[in-house]
Image 1 (cartoon, one colour):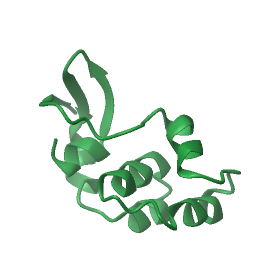
Image 2 (image 1 turned 120 degrees about the vertical axis):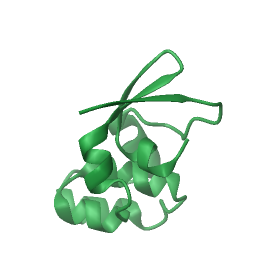
Image 3 (image 1 turned 90 degrees about the vertical axis):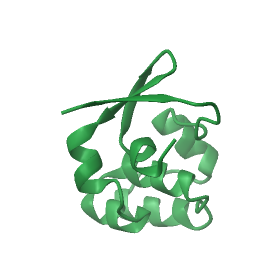
Image 4 (image 1 turned 135 degrees about the vertical axis):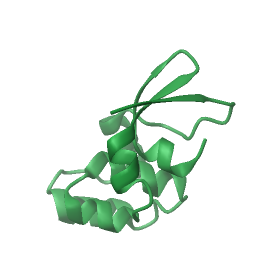
Length: 95
């Protein structure tokens, strides 16, 4: 699954990722920090997870959002995103 699609996925229908096409164009290539600065916390978390950059992200997330989290697992539970899909996933963009 491409990074831009994963960052902007809003849900799944079977093996198809439903992606916000407008958000993908606007935010898909931004760094986790840029997304945090925009207040797009879920997108920022997904970007950090995809980039394997969760070290230090939890502290930056807490500072930006004020949400009391202490581990990456807390963020995974908060957003309901636990990993990047390893299997082939179809993508359906909606605008």
